[in-house]
Image (cartoon, rainbow, N blue to C red):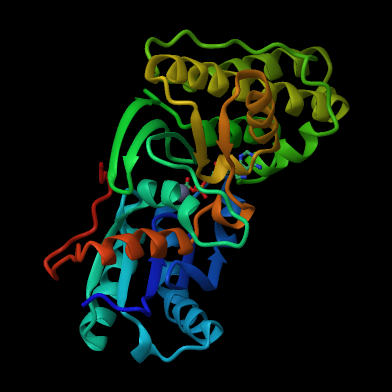
Length: 340
Ligand code: KG4
Ligand code: ZN
């Protein structure tokens, strides 16, 4: 079945983005993301609203991906979809849609682990892109996960450290909520942080053993700090927003970098790739570029469009599974806590 022309349709619906992409031999032909605005007013993703919006978006999004790729649906070699982890109601929409389309087009179905896909986004074929070689360490940082993963091959991945409670993206978003910023607050903290002084307000660095993380105490310390300061001065947030954001970002990036240094020391691997929504953060990007010079690391930072949830990353994972003829059968179900 090895073919010179491999066209993979990737479908992603694990959280609040409905996305579809077409890859031809690992290169992007189209990459469509419909972000659901409906959650903003609630300060977080509302699962029931997310699955309803996926149902509305999935047909037009897949249509658009095929049209923009300028291919016929008969050209599609296989359909890759996110099986998990994610919100069950959201995953079900993508899983059922992928199954039916695969049946209709009589092409193989390929299940993809969302977190593996975030890492494999580094292997999307791009001009002048440098790819990590195996083994490397991946720091996967998103709204749902914070992991350090030892990547020995495309699908040989071992989680060597992870959060014991909140994800770092949640720490960004919940801190932003405390400051009265809309959801998702991570990008806003990043934007304000760039004009603030990161040393203005010290936040604690939690003591967590091994390569694990904990962020729930961080959020609480931001809450207590803001409550105390606004009691003294009701305009404290407005008057200090940039400095508060810079201090929060500085502290969160320091927590991530401290564990990465430990992981490099422990494994002897000095190639680092970051993945997931928080890898869009300017603070972590700068810290990694500095680490290249300071510690002689080789760091891999994804393009912005491959950091937050997208279907190009699902399609590239599907591409490598297609090469291995690693197909799923139709009894497959969505898996909210899918591990690898
Ligand atoms: O990977 P992703 O799109 O979805 C999940 O699988 O969770 O990650 C979303 C997370 C959110 O918490 C969002 O606030 C965060 O990524 N994020 C950022 C930035 N851009 C997105 N956090 C900090 N700085 C950013 N620039
Ligand atoms: Zn994600």
